Amino acid sequence: MVQILLISNDEEIYSFTKNVVSEKGILTWKKYDFLNKNENIFSDVVIMFFNKEMVKKGTFESIIKVKGKMGSQIPILVLLEEAVPQEIISILETGVYDYLNISEIPEKYSNKIGELIRWNWYQKKYRQ
Image 1 (tube, one colour):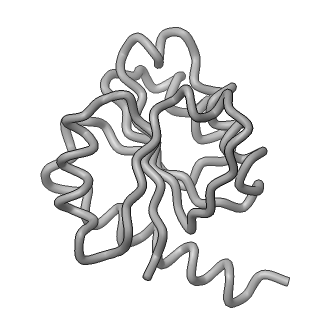
Image 2 (cartoon, helix red, strand yellow; image 1 turned 180 degrees about the vertical axis):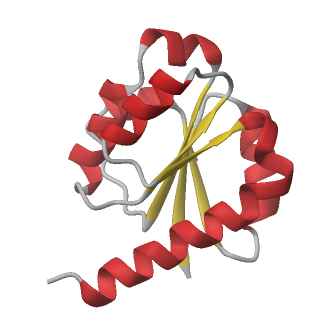
């Protein structure tokens, strides 16, 4: 089964993600303080939620820490509460797989997670 890591300080996002992921893989939930600990965790894919305050402060450091802990090729889906196009472009430039606005979650979330899992499979199969 696919290991999915959700990094979020929001319990509502965790509950919703748990329901969406139940048939796709095994979900582990960590809060952002996990990134400052010397704790290693294995995951095939990562989902990160940034609320509007976090987006305003900047997301780069957290994304870089995840890539440092899990490898630069780890597929990351970023969920954004509010972001302007410049912030979205900056997030994508850090090397995340994709993003989703929080308002799109009910319709597109399951499909995005499926795409993330397929991308992980493809990378493992064809990466040299």
